[in-house]
Image (cartoon, rainbow, N blue to C red; front, side, top):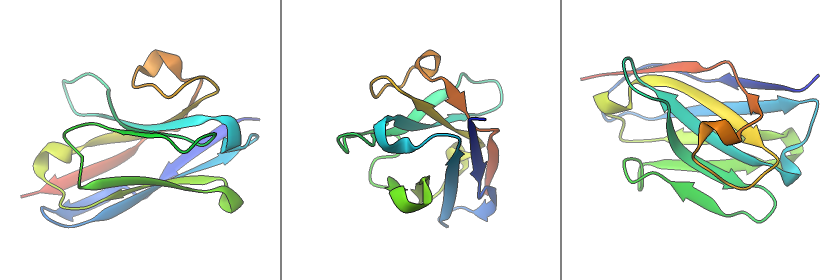
Length: 123
């Protein structure tokens, strides 16, 4: 069974850091593009950053450039989202997703989804 398990969310103060994890089971990330999306209350799901494990290319939304970093650990079949300098606008449910297609910020392009993990940043 193919599954993505997202974890690591929580409540932090503005300016602090947090690392989210996305572990895959039932498939390997090797030939997949993996993305982190987030959805704040009343807003559409937003593609925050993506990594293509086949060639290492990445995409970062302007809102997180310089603060968020996506990385992968092939041995653990896990993708990480390292978030720093968090602010209240980063508060959202964060989802990891994977696609056998190309790197994309369109959620409709992703076949597999994790369950979401809540990140709350208090000011």
